[in-house]
Length: 444
Image (cartoon, rainbow, N blue to C red; front, side, top):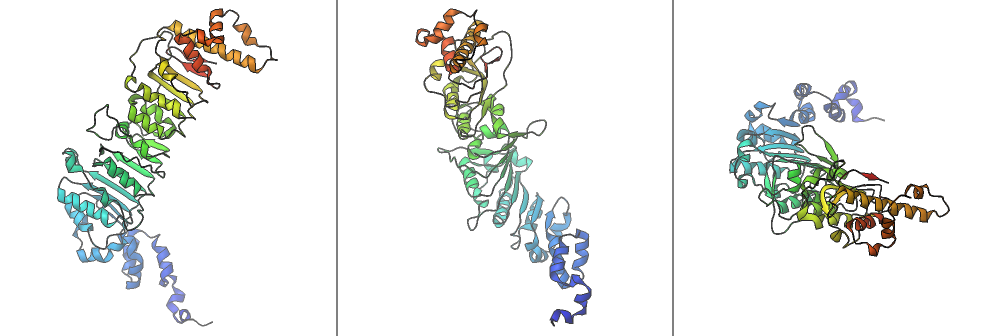
């Protein structure tokens, strides 16, 4: 079959004359080779120009600011990455009408209001194509009033199409918590959020608790997560940032000496030092998946009186075992439980495996030991009742136990001691294996 392709001997001899082949080769050549290729012909220039203009990094490409604006406008549609924009001349160089397909953008904002507004213009021009955005306030701006660091979230949001933003990294910027929720709501493809260097999220009269189910990675300090508003009072109520991320799998606390990825199941150990009502509320948004809430405990032979670090939120802490049916580990050494509050409502975590708290009224080692022994004896009786045909060695082990304690468990209404109340509460958890009440962990 005769075709026009067979008439051209050059195409038969050189496959690079075929545009589709050149397009594939363009993905593999180095920058230096691409520059040589564009000089071959207009056709080759068209094929290889995208490699030359694909990325602009002002840390490397210092002479980009000197290019004629017409040249930048002609080839600007090829640019996909812009990094290290820090000066007015660099910003002016990339604020061209054809530069609107950028996927990766990194900007450092200066104190000047004009510079900040132009940065927002650059983001807005590319908000339909951006996949990764890094926006940082420079050192001078970070030392200024919060108003200097405040930005408008509208520049991040594409109202004409679905935002393509997958990762966002903000350093030292400020906006309201409602604006942050709006940003999340309008970026459905977002999977990673990075908040560093005191990002301020100011709270208003109402909190938008929008939950972004696609975000799985968070980079932020504990202070940033649990106290995002730097002007709020330490005791003020409010949501932590965890409210927004119900499917979080990794939390990187950047302020640690070594980088450490913390699975969401371990949020409890990182947040225990800061437990307040807003933290409890945040954890309750994970109540269907929360397995553990804890802080490290101390093994010791004697009981020591300590301050109740959770005094202001004792009732709030009770919401965790009452509302989290899959909770298996509840470990707050600093929390002193009041049994009157505990017995107001049944705990939902029937599969609880380990409990480590202090109990108000169990203020001596003897009282703690008695409560634990009552629990142990009650468990043994339950086991024997479950297996009537089995000879119980555990009964023999307890022949020397106090008969009064045995009667107290058989007739719970007759015993109003704190020890008996604690024992009865512990007996409601059939899978409970370990209990710490202020001295050493007691295992069954």
